[in-house]
Length: 171
Image 1 (tube, rainbow, N blue to C red):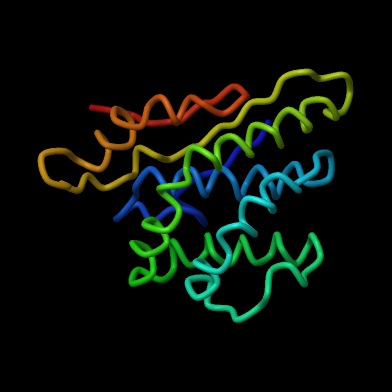
Image 2: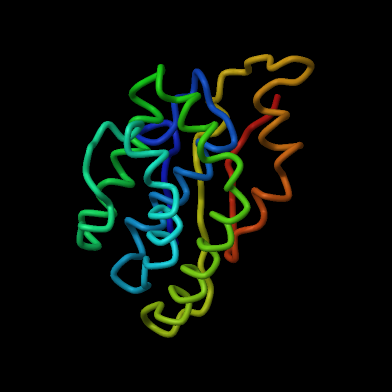
């Protein structure tokens, strides 16, 4: 099981969107499963976008020259900037969002490998994304960010090849 409270390190609850949740899931899956699964599909995906993203990660580093651990660290820095640096948030989203479908594809390759190497004979994997109920509702045109995430992107939210629980309390 991979569990994380989305609002603690990954997502700014004052300004959360679908891309933020997808990147948070990616970062946490990499962090928790990198010892049992090969992160290469995700890192290759990131490498293909690095020229556009390295300024947003606030690093001049050439991605290809880094080892796997350093590449994972650069990805973590990018996702940290999504939460910590509001002026970069929209730029990161604009660069990642058009590639969200391909990110899901490589995440699923990573998850297939992870499930084959789960300890103690386990065959299934669950991801729990907690505290999404703390998202502040913000209007984007006719819809709120919550509607955009959980209605408009529901198919993508369900697309990861594992059991998913997005904890959201709606009143």
